[in-house]
Image (cartoon, rainbow, N blue to C red):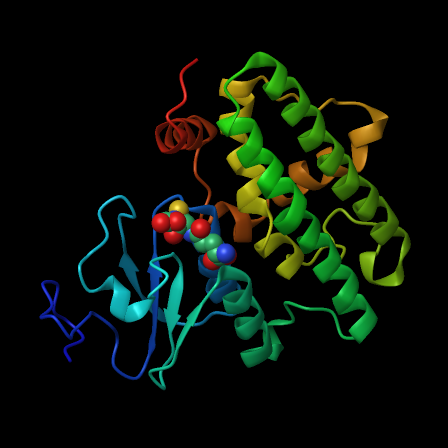
Length: 243
Ligand SMILES: N[C@@H](CCC(=O)N[C@@H](CS)C(=O)NCC(=O)O)C(=O)O
């Protein structure tokens, strides 16, 4: 196998010998979790950019599920699933302190991420894929309810010692709570432009809005930030949306 080949033979694929290789799609919110985790832990890696609408013929050798991202380790093992990759990076590089110290604080952080994984993301996809106005109304209401759920968890967390009053999940530290969620918050640009999503600037959503304003100014966010208009168009193309 060759680490430098771009047109690989049937049993070959590109990777960095003895190092980390991340297979990632531009603008993909799942891949952004891995990019931010590796960067926050200062892990050097080779980036193999992949166009998911035109997957290279060798990609099944990396991930038979044909999903992105995937991470090849120096040992040759390959990890898939963006949350598994983030958790691996946090475990492998504990000095980066991407997770809090105690088991209960880690569980609380993971519950926050779970709100996104099992409710915010599916509801956002529902809204983007709903055609009829009535369906869109209920999908929008469901999405707002899950954002309110995230809002209330943030407010609760900031009362805990590890929340330190905010404005991020762990006070001023950009942690796995942000690494695993912020790309999906920004992905809402598509739902705002094409599906009339408005997150009210009211007391009800004050913690969520404060959190978004705060993480948007952090270098860990900005390093991989994508302008809202570019994201909205990428979402529109992916879901075939029209204004
Ligand atoms: N549960 C997976 C989801 C990954 C995922 O859906 N990635 C998209 C990126 S656009 C993908 O690979 N889509 C191509 C496809 O589903 O065929 C994860 O968290 O990594």
